[in-house]
Structure formats: structure tokens, C-alpha cells
Image 1 (cartoon, each protein chain N blue to C red):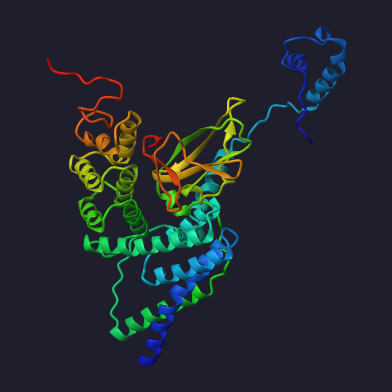
Image 2 (cartoon, rainbow over the protein chains, first blue to last red):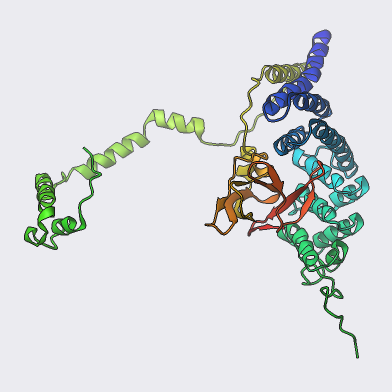
Length: 218
Length: 222
């Protein structure tokens, strides 16, 4: 009886990564070169064995294949993403989320890819609460950082909106507000500076468009 | 019998009693006569319903409602609350868990290798609100423009844009789930172009993906 149980456990432990590997290879067939499909399937098997989602890896490979990116570059990007998924799961565990869903791990990995540190992601994950969707909020932070807002400022900005009781749409709108400010010539940091405090549409209160003289007090 | 024949408006006027056969031009008279002949063939005898019909219908409804087969079916499909108390030995629980794990492993290993492609996971789409988002690109001289992104598995054939005349403006409207999505335009099937009207982030391949935020109230480029 004891031996049978051990065999069953062993079969399960081997079956999950093997299943993920064949599944990924089948999904990538015809969409990426064969060598990319093989490499991604191997990477995915390792990721699945660690209980992490493989869907982001498949999507990244599909994206690279669709864009005609060279094979070695696609494989490198997928490998880097796999490492970030590991790091993301670790950051979420340290934030007290021992069993995060696939979307949250993916969103966290995206935040890490755009320059946020594991500690910043952990702090942000701790600050997110209902009604905010954690994965979406982390993706917003990632986009802000990707736009050029310094990571530390990004975390402060998002946390500020959460603490002020902004709506989930307010969080989703943050990058558009920054983008609006940047369209007027502000840097990303300048555009993010006034957000969450007033209705300056991404422009800090002291900021003036290029070519316009600042008002001087008499 | 086909009912797809369309009569000339003047003939229709004749059938509606708005004009007489003599009012019609000679070339329409044959058509009008045919229409009148068909109309005349219709049985216009007033229909009278049996006074007992109402009672018969209601009796049938009651019979069906009281049918033991239907009651049994309802018991099977209608949700209800159950309280289940089990008293089992631990080794039985462990054995059952292992059996389930083994069955799962067999299913995973035995899964067919063909996976349907295209589109996001249906449950995920169904679980969230979808909002219509309009994509616009100014691409004069382009023969073909499409939008590909995380919402359609980067399939450049899934969402083609339509040219607005000869203005060079291409547009399409897509229903996207609430949240953030990355995308790019594909011009003439080869050139991947970030949306100049939206922010863009590094795509991991040394290029830029545009980002759109779809909120519960409206879809917009970030």
C-alpha cells in the first residue's frame, strides 16, 4: 500500500510538467519556428513544475512569432519572463499571498519587467485591497514605470490613489493622465507629480507648456 | 412556396385598396392581375374558435405541470442546499486523494495534442464586462491594416481595420474586457507600428507595444 502511494505521487509529480510541455508544444506548433516551440515547451515544463502559470510564456512566444522576431531573441525573452514569474511569485509570497492566481503572477511579472523592484512590488501588493483588482493595479504600476515615471514615485502615486479611495477606474486612468502631461512637454516624473492630488491632468501645478513664460509674482 | 416576390409599389397600392386596376399603367396590369388572383385565392373565411379551447389548453398546462416525469426532472436540475456529513477513516481519505491525483495525471498525459487556437480564455471574457474600443490609425498608402494584441493572441488576421474612404484613416471597433491590453498595428502584413496616440512600453523584443486601458465606463487609449 505504501509503495503504491509513493508510485502514484511520483507519477503525478512527473505528469504535470510533461503534460504542460506537450500542451505548450501543441499550441505553438505553426505559430513559431520548431526550435522556439521546443525551447519554450522545456521552459514551460520547469515553470509548471514550480506551480507557476505557463500561459504568459505561450503568449510571449506567440507575440514574438507573430512579429517575426528572430528565434534566439524570442527564446531569450521567454526565458527572462520565466525568471520573472519565479521572482513575482516570491514577491507575492513575501506580501502574504501564498497562493496567487495566474493573472496576478503575470501582472506582477509585468511590473518587474518594467523596472519595479521585488520589494516595491511586495509593498504595492500589500497595499491593494478590495475593490481594486490586484493584477490590474500592478499592471497600471508597470505601465507608469514603463512610461518613465521613477519606480519609487510610481508606487507612491498608486498607493496614494488607493488610500484616497479613488475608484478602480481612477487607477486605470493614471497612465493616461501621465501621458496627457507628457504630450504637453512634461517629463513622466513631472506629469506624475501632481496626480492624485488635484485636477491638473498630469501636469504639476508649477509646470507650464514649452514656449510659455512662467508667471512671476509682482 | 416562395414568398419572396416583391410587387411594384403601385401594385401594392392596388392591393391596399388605394387605387383601382384602371389607374395602373398598362405594363403593370398583368402583375396586378396576378397579385389580385393570388389574393383572391386566400381563404378569408372568419376563423371561429371553439368555446372549449381555453379550458382544453389550461387542462393540458396543468397536466404537464403535474407530470411526475417533469417533477422528477426538476428535482434533478434545480439547485438546492445539501448538508453532507462524512465519517471516514483517514487512510480512506488519503487513498481517495491519491486516486484522484492519479486520475488527473492520466488525463493530463492522455490529453489530445490539438488545442483550439484563437481568442482569449472564454471564461475570463465572460466573467468581465466587455467594452467597445475604437482603434484608429492614419496610414496613407497602406493596402492593409490590422490590430493585433494580447486580446487576440497577436493574430494579425483577427481584427482588420477598414479604410475611411481615401483619407488614409483606418478604423475598427472591438469589444474588449475591462483591464489593460497591449497591442500594435500591422501595416501591410509586415510592419508593426505602435499607436502614435497611445503610450507604449517595451515589448521585451526591443520594440514598443501600445497600451489601452478599458474601464467600466469607456474604452480609451491610455
